[in-house]
Every structure is written in structure tokens, then in C-alpha cells.
Length: 364
Image 1 (cartoon, rainbow, N blue to C red):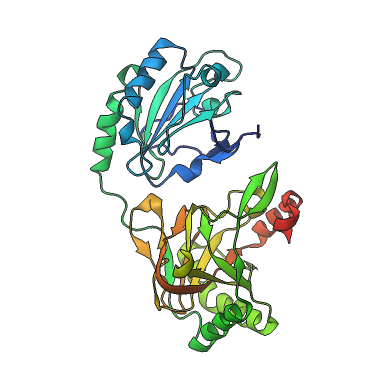
Image 2: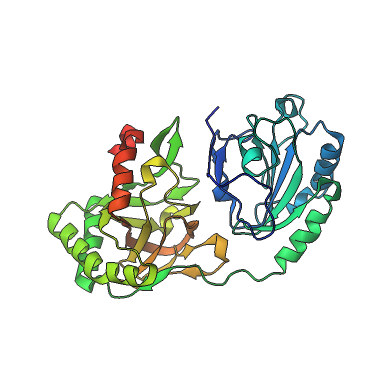
């Protein structure tokens, strides 16, 4: 079983308005390091059970499961948190996909982080949190009032979502001929399957999973073209980032041309770009579109609603690597883009420190 990793916020019961801390933990019938931060984008019900053998906890769980259709990963998600291995062994809990999952918190790490358990104490305070799509607490509900969860979800669904994600759009980063030259790089090489980073046995590992991401990438191997791109990022994009976010970007990670193709069903599910040790240095993600003759493939930030974002041809969309984002499925044509990550000197030190955690294929 993987070691849990959690944020370092002080442990206490959360109240309305608090943001739920992220963690990675084992999940029943699934991965040993499921990332709670990926649950954002729809309302979440987080049930700190302790043990489903306790009658009042079992009754609260039954109340929630009696309306299991409310939890479908579209309208809402339900996560139980159990500290009792017998809940699994005796089948007191079960996952129902989509929408109902259980974290295995046998060492009480999650429960302590959220204030349900106290270090060095056997006491446990079962309770239920209702979180909005950004994982901000909307309501804390006692387990003897579990039916109130559905009223809270109803109120939450009637609350308007934040309309705009905190992203920056900058036109005119690359000229027409530079866009064409970058597209030619991809067309000559053909592109190779693009993976994504995930922690596996403590190492940041490159994973390929066509159910999560379908994209092909080509390295920009021409030094002159890499230099031309770097100059334009430094003179045309970095000043806009400095002005908007008060961040001085001095480093660039990766020079690639990526392609999402409708014929291959191109897409990239919701993810964050800095959640592993090998990617923790990343500060801002950049999408520079190289063409505009396609449909679909736009950026969406699920924590901030259904609105989609598209950089103009030759222009950039810039956003924090901490934001949950996705590339929507392609509908027509092929979308070409160059997708650097930007960071600074302080982050470069983080990258040097964490290079030991890169698996061989990720390091390459």
C-alpha cells in the first residue's frame, strides 16, 4: 500500500468557506495513490465514517446510498473515509461506479488532517462535508442529519458557478511563418504517443493511458527554432505574465509540438500539472495554438464552470499549473500547439532537488 501524501495545513474540523486540503491515498478497488485534488469540478460529499460498524455511521451511510443515483460523477461525487479494515473485509462498504468511492485511511492520516481524528487519541468525530466544485466547504453536516446532504446539494446546484477561470490570454506571440515551421516539425516527425506523469512507488513515472489522454507530440530538435521560440516567450509572453501575476518566468521546460487529432479521438482528461515530485517545480502552463482550422480540443477548467478557452492562432493562454484543466474531445480536424511550462530560479532549485525521484523513462 502506498504511503499517503497530504498537505501540511493544520488539522481541525473545517467550516463553511474553508478549502479542503488535497491528499493522495489508497482507494477501495482502485489505485493506491488516488488524488483527491482530481475530484474537483463537481460537488463532492466527503463522509468521515471512521468505522461503518458503528450503528449511527451505518445508518448515515444507508441514508446516502438510498439515493445513490445522485452520485454519478456529473452532478456530485461521494467519498467515504474509513479507518477500519473490517469495513472492507466484512463488505460493509463497496464502491459503486460512477460516483461512489471509499478512501482507506487505516493510519488516520486523512482523518487527522481534517480534524476527525486527533493524534495520539482513539477518539473520532464522524461528520460529513459538502464541497463545491472548487472543493471549498459549503456545509458541514452531522451524521445524525445525513439526509440534509441532499438539501445542501440542491442549494449548491442553484448557486451560479464562477464564470471565469484565472487565466491570461495574450495574442501575437508567434508569427504566421513560425507557426508554419512548428507545424512542419510535427508533420515531418509524425508525433509519438504522449503520456503523463504519475507517482509510482515513490518515483515520478511516465504513464500512457489512452482512456485518460490521446495526443501525439514531436520534439522541436532544430536549435534555431528552439531559440526563436525562447526569444518570443521571453520578450512577448514573460512581460505579460510579470504584469498580471507578478511572476518573473526565467526557465522553460520542454520544446514540443503537440497535436490533438479528431480522427484519433484526441482529448486530455482533467488534471493538474504539478502534483508529482518530478513536476513540482512547474509554475505556469502555456498553450500556444499554431492553427485554427479545427473544432473541439479547447481548454476547460472544471473548478470554474463549463466555459471553454481557446488561444488565437499564434497567441497564448497561460494559467497556473495548480489549476485543474482538460482538453475537450476533438470534433473536427487536427489542433497543433506548442505547450511549454515556465518556472523561475527558485523552482529550478526544487527541480534539481527532486531529480532523484524521476523514473528513468520520465528523466529521459
